Length: 344
Image 1 (cartoon, rainbow, N blue to C red):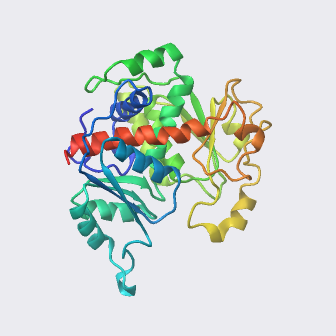
Image 2: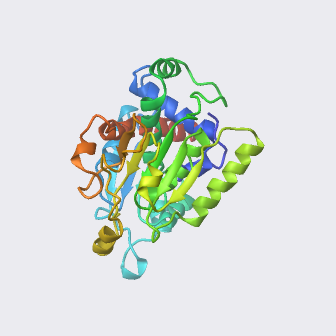
């Protein structure tokens, strides 16, 4: 995988080609299968984990993945540094980026508005990896794609692919043309990241969100533009549909995915949102018209109103393997964006 020169940072999967995405997933699968061992390519290098939002999976996967290459992860929580509104005595994103980027070798940032990470990347001398913003969560999407390949690529084909070294500019994994993913929930950073990636890998995506919370127009426009480009080049591209009815979205689907209905920063809207999302709880009854082999995914942490225990703890649930895959995909991203592309 050879990334364009302007891809020094990873802020969204929109900027990666389908080959780029599959190369990262393939590398992640190889790390997990122990077919390749991490070399100490980041020894003596420091990762600054700049988090303004609390985290379990993102922090653990980021720290452990960086350490696997011999590097030193340094956690920089919102309460640990002087980040804030300069008018109130804080330090701006521009100043923070220039200072932090001059002292660490890479930045793994879990922030609020997407404009914050764009400012960070614009002024940082070190590569910046998006560990979550309100708009995109590329690290979660990569782990989700990996999980879907593990679940739906035939075992013998997956094993052969994982044993093989990736070739430059040749997809190391086949498109998943007969897999449909249904999203049932809020129009948030997870589905945004899945919509800009999964269809380009041949996966169909059926989205169900309340009418009050539609998918952002720019995401829908990206999907349309990419579909037209794929058609002109005769490349596979999944079908994408939108509805407000979960039962329509899950009809015939192979994977049902949901997430929190109340994201961090939306706590004041909780009562209203819980009312709006009535009927969106994932249950066996909701999935009665899904494909017989349907699976369930959730990026965690799960709240009781989003999915019932009969689904969450059932054999259909992939959630804990999905969580583990956050580490393997973080390793692939750090290796490529930090050790290879930027040669830090």
